[in-house]
Length: 195
Image 1: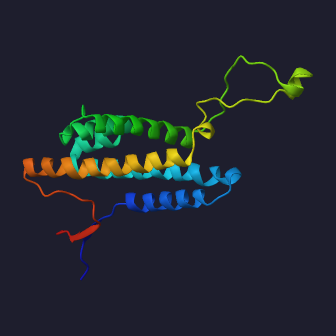
Image 2: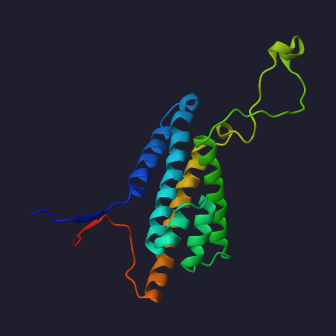
Image 3: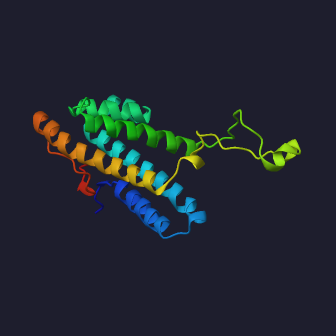
């Protein structure tokens, strides 16, 4: 006789472990090659945050509200979730975390949806550029994710994801107690479902 089993699994810890591994490898990699580890580490910290955010939303919202949450933009999801669980969004720690989350979302989107970046600048020509315009070297836009990576920035992304998890653990405990529901710590689980 077959039994119907419902399983729930959470991937954010796997994603964070990939990011941490890449960051540690970046710290041991030569300077000219670090970007090959730092950029994916930063991206995986962003993926881990998004996965955690979706897991938290799945714990708090249901039905049409969950569908609306799932289809929302990342910063909208973040604000909605923090508001629902009663987080003190005017607290300086949460404000700072939110600013870092906005930066993470921007970085994630720039990497995931990378497009050619054209921009104009006014600057002095240098060296061979003065001889012939075909020698002009292209500059990178400050908006290019290739200009916005560093080990320190990757560590900031890691800390932001960790801080979000701590905020979730604190406020969700209060939220679930208030509504009379057991807290969800996102531990993989399975249960038998009656047909």
